[in-house]
Length: 120
Length: 146
Image (cartoon, rainbow over all chains, first blue to last red; front, side, top):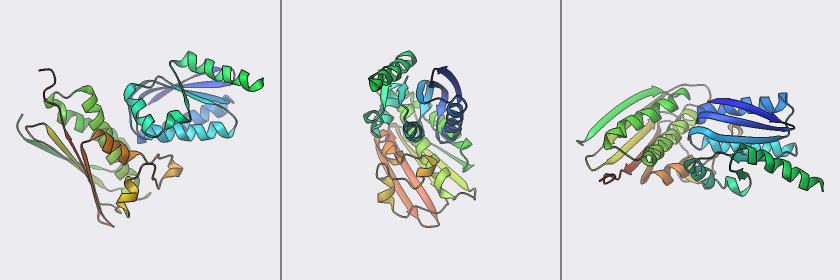
C-alpha cells in the first residue's frame, strides 16, 4: 500500500494505492495519523480510487480515523470508492455517519463548504 | 473441468494474507469466473486468514495456517481455512456483525458478516486450544459468456 498526501489549508487528502487488508491497514493508519500530525491538518479526505482490493480492515481503518478526526473537531469525507468497496462499507453502515464525494476535489470542497456553514 | 484439490500451509503472519488470496484466485481461474466472483472469494479468504493471523496464536506465538481448496466439475469451490490455535469460545457471538475482541487494533468485527455475504455457505467449527476451521463454499456461475 502506497499513500500520497495532498495538503490544502487545514485539509489533508490521503490518496491510497494498492490493496487494503489487515497487513496494509496497520501501515496506512500509522502513515495517515503521522501525516495529519506533522502537517497539523484538522480535516481528512480519504481517496480510495487507487485501491484495487479491500476487506473489512478498511472499515476499521476508516472508523479509527473518523474517531480521531472527530475528537479534534475535524471532518472526514471519503471518495473514489469502487462499487465493490462501497458494498463492504455499506454493510458496516459507514455512509450513515461519513459523507462520500465523487472525487477528491468535491471532497475537499464539501469539507470547506461545511466549515463555512458552521461559521455562520 | 475435472475435480481438483490443492493444499497450502503457511505461517500465520499478515504478509501471508495476500498470498492466501492469490492462491484462491489462481485456483478458481480455470473456471473463468467473473471479476465479481473472484473478488468475493478473495475477500472471504482474506477475512478468514486475517482472523487466524490476528486471533489464533495470541500476540506472541506464531503458528501455522492450513488452507485446503477443492473444486468440483460443477463449479462448486470449497475453501477450508484452518488453524491450530486457541479456538473461538463463543462462535455465535463471534459471527455476529460488529463483534470484535480486537477493537484496539481497529478491527471492525465485520469479517464473518462479509464472508457470509460473499459466499453461499460459511461453516465455523472450533475447539478450545485445538484450533478453528472455517469452511467457505461458493458455486460459480459456469453459464457466463455462453
